[in-house]
Amino acid sequence: MLKKQIDHDLLKRFEKGLDPRYPQKNTIPAKILGYGEMSTIFEIDQETQRGLAYKRMPIFHTQQEMDQYEQIYQEYNYLLNDEVGIHVPEFTSVRIAPEKGNLIIYNVQRKLPKESICNSLLHSLDQESMKSLMLAVLREFKKVWAFNKKSTGIEIGIDGQISNWAVKDYTSGKNLAGQNIELYYIDTSTPLYKKNGVEQLNPELFLRSAPSFLVWLVKWLFLEDVMTRYYDFHLVVVDLIANFYKEQRPGYIPLLIDTANTFFSREAKEFSVSPITLKEVRAYYREDAMIWRIYLAFRKVDRFIHNRILHKPYVYILPGKIKR
Ligand SMILES: Nc1ncnc2c1ncn2[C@@H]1O[C@H](COP(=O)(O)OP(=O)(O)O)[C@@H](O)[C@H]1O
Ligand SMILES: [Mg+2]
Image (cartoon, rainbow, N blue to C red; front, top):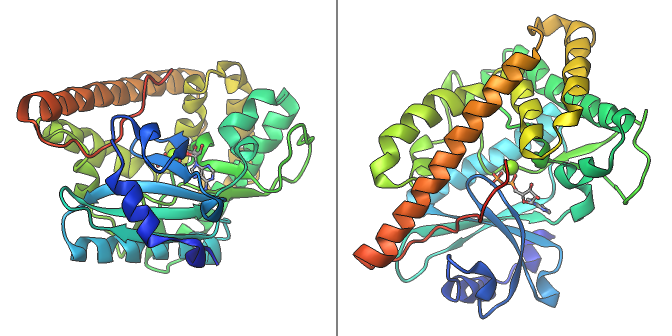
C-alpha cells in the first residue's frame, strides 16, 4: 500500500532541491515532523504524499551497504512486529543516488498523528495516566526480554525512549488512566539485534555522520556504551526515565521509578532486573546529555569546516538548539 504512494521522481527532485542547512526552503516544500539524535523526519507537502513520514539517511557509500541495511531494516521490523508482538507502523524504504555525495535511503513510514507521539502526549497527562502509559511501555519491553530468553539465536535490542512510542488511535484529551494502552514503536531505523552473538548492524555506518576528527571519541562512546545499553533491561528503563529531564518533565520521575520497580518485582520477576534509584537516573542523564550536546556541537564545527573552509557539501541536516 505504502509503496504505491511513493513517487521516486519527486523524491529525487526533493533531494536535489534540499539544502541540508535550511531543509524548509526546498523547492518542493516539506514539513519537518521530528528530529532525532541522528536524523530528520519529513512529510512532503503534496497531495499524493500525504500521510507518509520520510526519514532521511544519507550515509551509504555502496549498493552493497544499502542492500545490507535494507535487509536488516526489514528483518528488525519483522522481528518486532511478528515475533515479539510490538506493533510497528507500515513501512518501506526508497533509495536515492544524488549526483554527488553519499547514497541515500529514505525510510518511509505511515505517518502517525502528532498528538499520539508519546513525547507530545505526555505533556497533558496527569500522574495516573502517566503511570498507565509507563506500564504499557514496560509491558512492551517485557515482550522483548521474553523473546530474548527463548533460545532462537536472536537477541533483540530496543531504544525505548518516550519519543519512540505512539499511542494507537489516540485523540487529544482521551482518558488513559487505568486503561490498557496499545502502542506503536516507531524508531526502527537503527536495527539493533544479534544473531548468534553477532551484531547485524554495521555500526560504522552510523559513525559516518560523525565528524572525522571525532570518530575515535564516538567509537568509544557509541560502540561501547550506546550499542550495549539497548540490550540491557535495566539500562533501557533507566534511559527511558532519564529522558524525562530532556522532555522537560522531571516531575514524573519519582512516579516512573516507582512504577518500574514495582513492575520489576512483580510482573517481570523472572528477569531479575535490579531496581532503579533516583541517583542513578540523575547521573545517567547528566552523562547522556553531555555526550549528545558535545556531539552536536562538534558536528556544527564540522559543518562549518566543510562549508566555509573546504567548500565541500555537508550532507547532514542538523537539528537546531535542543532543550535538555
Ligand atoms: N511515522 C511517524 N509519524 C509521525 N511522526 C514521526 C514518525 N516517525 C518519526 N516521527 C517523529 O520524528 C521523531 C524522531 O523519529 P525517530 O524515528 O525516533 O528518529 P531518531 O532515530 O532520530 O530518534 C519522533 O519522535 C516523532 O516525533
Ligand atoms: Mg527516536
